[in-house]
Image (cartoon, rainbow, N blue to C red; front, top):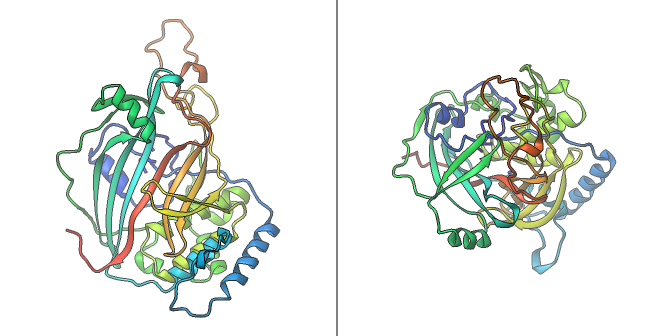
Length: 396
């Protein structure tokens, strides 16, 4: 719920290794719009007693299932069961999953932009990138990055795009200035690039495989990870996650949990522990059913995480707004389908500072920046995990 530093300069550096997204950018595989990096958030606290009660109730529900060979399912026999136990159902179903030679993911990252000059006459388009990654249990990785053509976001946006003449490229306002999106399919695919020492949060595959399989012990182990966990900091400071408190700790733990569930090559039992750990974090809520950006049905996990940037000389051109993060999971398969960010406070785009010093003030305000036409509750950006599975099939 990628594409997620240059667009927002909000990535929290969680690992020492250079991620595939960074390698892709450095190799100049894409230039416009800039890449998206996973955004970090500040998390308001929720009553621990309420969370404990939720987990206790859901554990009681799970304990009624004794046949471990049969998947636990939500609302079987057509019953309108609330998805309140979705995280623990997911944990139960991923627990016994298979493994293989490679952990393979196909990740599609999307960012929603607005085309037009005013609120009444604009339409939304999505910019997309695809990342394919195969990592074996020795840490050898092969990844490929592919630009996907932009496209209208909804059926109504498609109608307005066609009414505008179905242009094959459009200008959009971004947090880094004007950008161009292309509706044409790229002419060629990028080759699979090799990395010999792939790590996640600085951990080798052997260290990942040795992570605890009990949620309390897993949380305790993750708190020893060192990284730059601050959402915004003028100076990068590496520190153990254990040094964080309150909302900062929850934000960091949920960030790591998302990677363990979708991207890192960890055993099924560790993924199950990550789901169970998430169920105990303050502020995490299980909500209604929905579909992800690929149309797959799932259950919404709300992470009431919010990010802001104060207005100043250098931040005014990047009016990032505030966002709420959601995960979409498939409890029946024990998989994280997608992450998405919903607009809380609409963002603005960016105009360049006037050049030179001609004696005139160069004051930057929110009002002087172009409107990006986002409304509260709309999807701002997303990541979908089209494939996240163990396989014995080598990358081609």
